[in-house]
Image 1 (tube, rainbow, N blue to C red):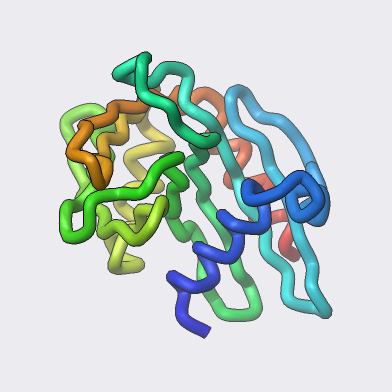
Image 2: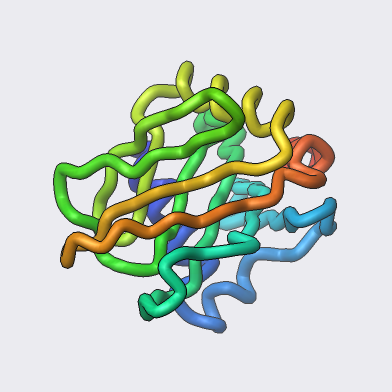
Length: 167
């Protein structure tokens, strides 16, 4: 299964409707991050998720916004980065993550943004563990640039908890 399909599936399952969101089981809260697990017939998915502590511009209507770091042990995927930005993104225009002096580009599809290579995902996760805040920018289909700031408080423990929940 394509990892982008998997990331999209978890973003959809957790945020699309309240009924689907209830299928993922809350495990623990660590700082500003929450850990969830979902098991569908022996195929476990565990993830840390957070919502931004601030968004700009304030006058833009958006659906809920989430940043996910997911593990799919059966598919040998760990630390998969995916975002739900809450609006349709402009095709072909990358979103960005900035943590300290490090910047990462993400490709976009629909309302989601994803890191293309696993090696870069590892770099993002390492930067998250060493950082205090993370800024995500994306451009809507209409051309509006949005900026979301996330706290990284508790991310290391949340990622450890997600990994433990998938064992």
